[in-house]
Amino acid sequence: MLIAVHRGCHGGNIIENTIPAFEIALKYGGDIIEADVAQSTDGRLYTIHEGQEERLFFSKKNIQTCSSEEIAHLSYRNSSSNKVGQKVEVLEDVLKHFKGDALINLDRAWNVWSDVVELLDKYSMFDQVILKSPVQKNYLDELERLNVPVMYMPIVKRRSELAEVLNRPINTVGAELIMENKESDLNSDPLIQELKERHLLVWLNTIRLDDAETLTLGYDDDRSLLESEEDGWGKILSLKPDIIQTDWPLHLSYYLKKRSKRKNELIL
Image (cartoon, rainbow, N blue to C red; front, top):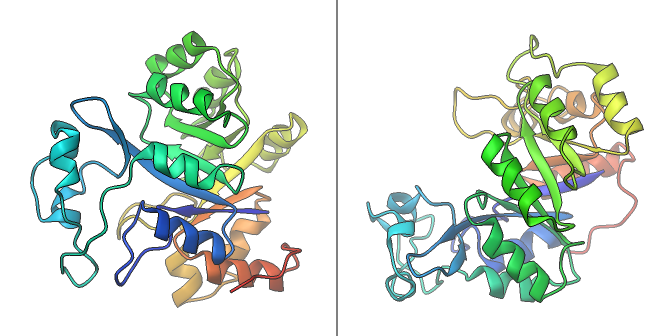
């Protein structure tokens, strides 16, 4: 059972999508660090979730409309809304820092995959990085065009999307299954068993983005922490995933250890 950590462990003075946040995520039991990717106007890649600028910098300007020089002068705001010295991380620096140390899931990079692949080739990291995206024809076409052994994890909301991906000659290693409710046609034990028989990883997501949206039948972090681990993460385990994505890796690690789903001791 692998734990993927959403934007790293952040809070207090530690900022999401930064090397410190990723390091803490690994210390707290994470196996996969998830980073968002955005590109400056002059082509430099950064680990940041575009569209979050007002929260992160008190700025209404989208980071993808900024030059690398402008980005270098941005000041993050911490959880108390105070300016801190942490700068926006350059993707290349993040890759170099974690080369050989952890699996890295790059999200929201689908419009700059060719530039990402160039970096992965430069540092020989095709076996360490997973690219994720919604299932769209242009994204799949681009992966086919690139024709490199980078690992791909589609974000799937219905069986037809899964079928479309699996019919493509790309290095699909698994699928993130989004089950918004019990009527989802992905909510199927035989389907999950079929994926496993095809040696594909099943990724389920327990993060809670807001009060309304659910990603896996409502069995999320909030429910696990505030109500019952068994009615949250326990229900997720019953679906037999290979990867669980969370905002709370330390708590999930302890729970999985209690359920004998983790073999290694945590080092804190």
